[in-house]
Length: 207
Image 1: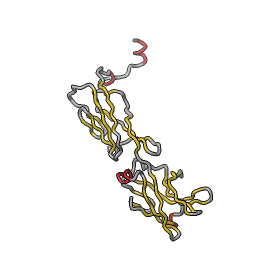
Image 2 (image 1 turned 30 degrees about the horizontal axis):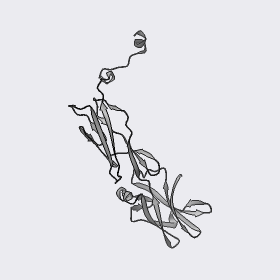
Image 3 (image 1 turned 60 degrees about the horizontal axis):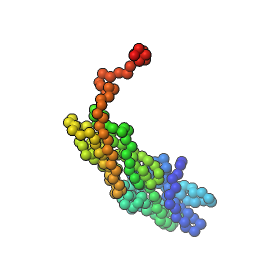
């Protein structure tokens, strides 16, 4: 199992830390499997689950499954405080989870075909370097023309404009606002016609 190693606490010759499985995505989902590790020699080893207990007031623990509140996590800069109880003693420890550092547009096209609604793709850059697509649980998107249905810009039936400016802001207190302007395509694309079909090889050769 790949481990994402986080903060540890040195206690004389003893070291403990809280880890989580790096195959999970706490960047996007408010839950993660956590466990304590103990340093033995020059490496950390996962402790048997019956040799310790974890406690935190900053999330909900059910066994090793931690559910956390994203707003609280962001207010605490990604840190969750724990107590490890083992061998008759209690030790404080912290778990640092990745949080959103920046947001950016990653649009599929550089213009809008005025025949369909337009999906506005937004990505998040997280504190651990991961770049992942975001949804409306993370950001709010607005447009200066027509309106948004979640992440999708709704094409109006009447259009007296030639460009649309999209604005995106984080819902988690990140003081960042990004804008992007796209123009509507003025020339019709024959491939958008309902009866369009690609030419055959023989038709191309004949022409």
